[in-house]
Picture (cartoon, rainbow, N blue to C red):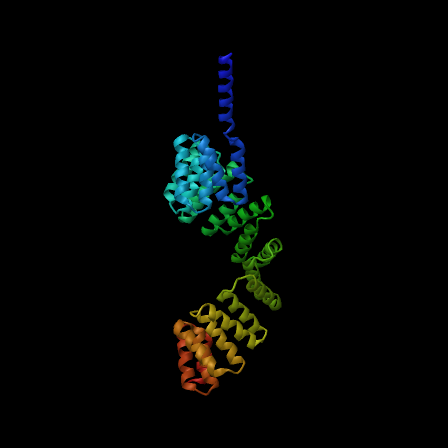
Length: 373
């Protein structure tokens, strides 16, 4: 009777010990859920508990490493990926995640070696080829990058990001048609791929297909209404087409959405100038100068606007500043000559026009013949 009782007690004790161990699968799934929510510290706590009860499963370390990586704790992430590979040296996922980490750390050679291991273990790992291609682009090895992106596409022809990245590589190689075709494939796969629309618009713009570029920038804006760069570039196209009010609208949108660069304000000023809104042009050129006090063209343009609004003496100062910033700026020399001529300083005007002509401004030659000995 005593033996039976002892066995029952031992049985209950063992059951009690086991009941203290949590369901590891449930804990692990909760950790992944917290990762998806961006709650990385909570995820790490859960992965810690899982590892405490079973420290021999490599993917527990891979996931905790990913959480550390998201937090910028790269050394801790690296330790976890190394531990995962210690437990399973044939884990393609561990090599992939470590390669990704090395890439973030700027250790490109180590990343390349790890991506190569991934591909050796799993030749159909498209993301590894794609990421390897991105490193090649970063290193300026564009032809090697193309081979990697082509392999990623061969593995998965619906891999939109690989098509996009192939377009970037072709763009670096000045293969405009192939660049555009690659972005087009990415858009076919994912019509919401905003950056593919944007890059294709830019490629069209660079190759002189302005109408197609205009359409693509509009497609970007319809999908992402706060895309400041798309408004800016569309504004440039409208300006080239003489649609000045549309150009102004787009420059203002670009500025409202945070693109407050000197170039945007300078272009806006030029549009006001074309509309003979000289006071507004001066305001825009001044803002351009506030953004970049070394922008010689903004000083020159403000000088032109001041000249047209009757502020000829301060216009002289602006042309002088443009020339000091860029002594080879033929247009500024010519424009300052015009102001000197207007102020009856003919000797100074002729001197400036002579310099402008030396720098290649042919119009200055006409003025020299007409007004100078």
